[in-house]
Length: 98
Image 1 (cartoon, rainbow, N blue to C red):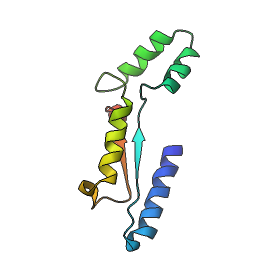
Image 2 (cartoon, rainbow, N blue to C red):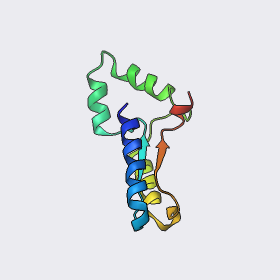
Image 3 (cartoon, rainbow, N blue to C red):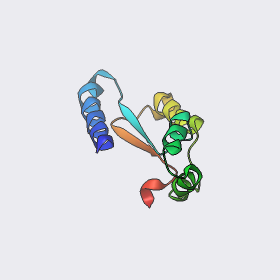
Image 4 (tube, helix red, strand yellow):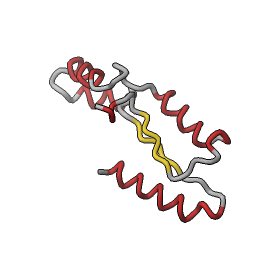
């Protein structure tokens, strides 16, 4: 639900700011291998089994890396994405296709 709210907010900002040359986009990441994820997994009964379950839920068979999320943000901020606004880039290793 929160990602839906962020997407709607992104579209509203893009519509309002677009005439002023401002682009607004968002990145919707899946689980990413970070210390915060480790903290989450440590709170489960079996952290390794929980990690394996998460990994198996992704079409690419692994969790994302922070650099992979950063690369997508860099793309959206670059001139390569100069015609992109109001978009939510899903960076989730195929999770949304399951």
